Length: 158
Image (cartoon, rainbow, N blue to C red; front, side):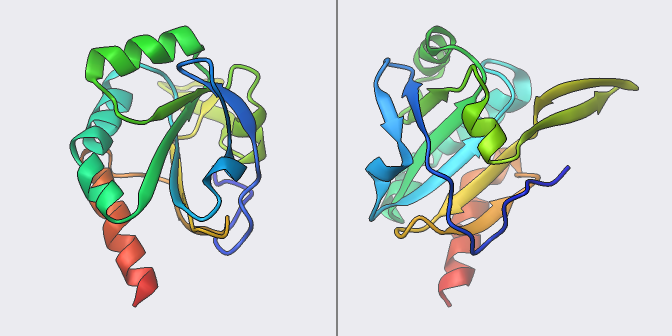
């Protein structure tokens, strides 16, 4: 499945609560570069690998001017536990009603072991200071995600 959005398009705005119960909006990040990453579930093996890669390379991302926001359908409470357990330095948005997931086209049918079910398609959007989607990673390299983001951003700049 591919998102309905494309590179060069304006990123849809959203408003939702983070792991601390604070309302977060994409508008809050105007003038900043944003790594908006969507993942299926807190504290599962692949999601943890991805989150820890972003955590371990958070300095690299911030040095390159990126803010990081994770989004999943988990609750604020679940996000808070995930943040605390893995010492995550970035915002995790609780999109329990799938508002953001649907706006970004990352909620849809999945298949595992022949079973079909609805879930989050792991996808990352790199959004520039003007709110334009500059890069979409449909299959992020979870163990090297931060590095691939910076590498692709640098290609865009040259």
